[in-house]
Image (tube, rainbow, N blue to C red; front, top):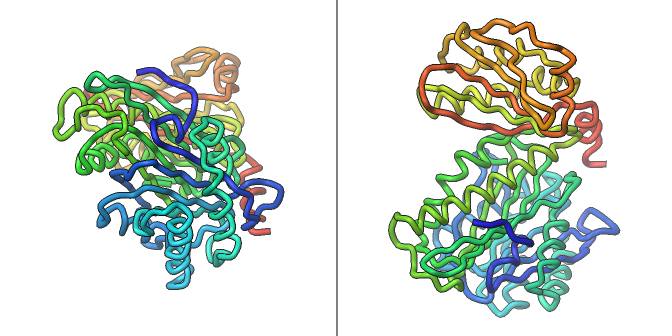
Length: 407
């Protein structure tokens, strides 16, 4: 597997475009379109929030009940959540506008929205954006990048990646883009992720690969503890790599799953590191657990701890907060057997051994915690299971951003 340049247009047959529809923002693009030359098998995972945005409901119908998908329309600025029957009808109208412009069935058009909850979409602008993007579609890598930029809200950087692997003697490409910065919390996040691949694979295995992988990727990200109404991950596969169809689990399936995990892990880290107001990506790894479930519970508890996140912002090796967060997680372990390390590009330091401070250098610890990517590693010495979660520090700017998000 190798990382290559690009995002959603890296795989064969995929094109993208962006438009400035002025849905909420002015002076920037705020709509994106992804299109496949051939119909795609589609897989998806969606928010676990009981309050689901209209696009989530629309996409679930297509992914679960329609034979194929061929395009995605995404807008930023307005989430089309808590908008009732009118909001769902606007999803239909968006899909119909795209279907007319692209010459494909409306039931093959997926839609996604991100932004302010409770506002109705300005359909005249949405329709105009769709009409502008259709003739502008391009397979160029830059078109994928422009699409990734168009779906940003409070994100400060675009998030895209592509990889190539060999499957069945053919080069298979998997690309992706996502957005997410705030209202990010397992399970799933205000997170939208669009993945495109030219692999030939059965619909059932495509869905299984995605559903299994989000457990270790998107469901392990938390910025602020708020689970969004719009969380969506869509994976489209058009089969244009012409590899022998993957219809059963084996080496080809495992190779694809490895590529999918690499792409999703990269995008998750980008989301966590770009958390609203964040200055650092905060990674938490639990080692030596007796089960994966125990490791996941402990890692999530630490990465979501507001006190720990504040300590990371202050470059303060306040390890008591980490041990405390582990203690209230609900997972059982012996705190007197825990070893804890901090690690970054500046080095690695052992903070506690068997639950007691090692007498570490505060100066060295501060240096390690002052980097833009910081990892806490806790070994609980109970078994061989492990898990990693991603989050970010908690800063003054997080409150500033969310205090006036609608104004």
